[in-house]
Image (cartoon, rainbow, N blue to C red; front, side):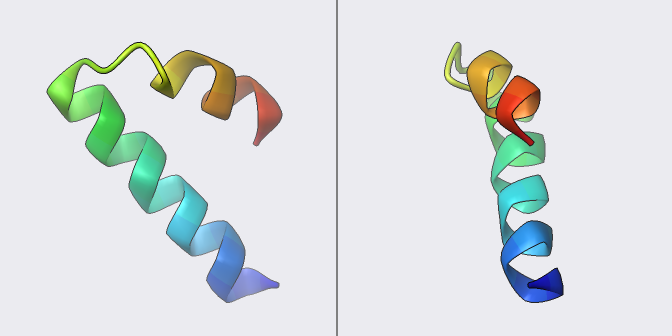
Amino acid sequence: MANAYDAVRGWIEAAEEIGHPVSSPHRIAA
């Protein structure tokens, strides 16, 4: 599970860097 969680965090960080709006719901879900 740790790998999946790490991958999700990586996606969130990348989305925040780009400023993509999808980062907000992902952050709440995580």
